[in-house]
Image 1 (cartoon, rainbow, N blue to C red):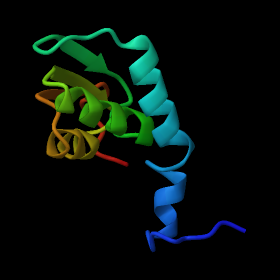
Image 2 (cartoon, one colour):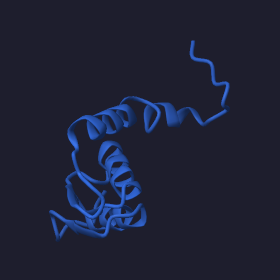
Image 3 (spheres, one colour):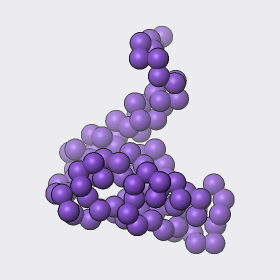
Image 4 (tube, rainbow, N blue to C red):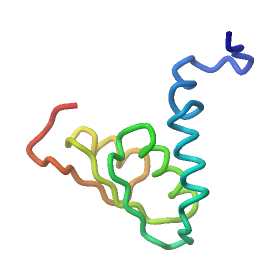
Length: 95
């Protein structure tokens, strides 16, 4: 049984503190060689991995261009810091 000593919502453990967060964090540290001022592109940016990568990139002073699957998701991606975001399915407003 997992102990929740930090009293975080359990949903955090399947998001940023779980596998998606670890994938984002370690993947970014190991494979990104971006430097402050660079531009990065994040696909599937509204998902847990993409959303975390956006925030990691912004924290390093990068410009972020992101794609998502609907206009609603584009709004979310912009709200977490993407400089430019677009829907890869422009006519879709679902999800």
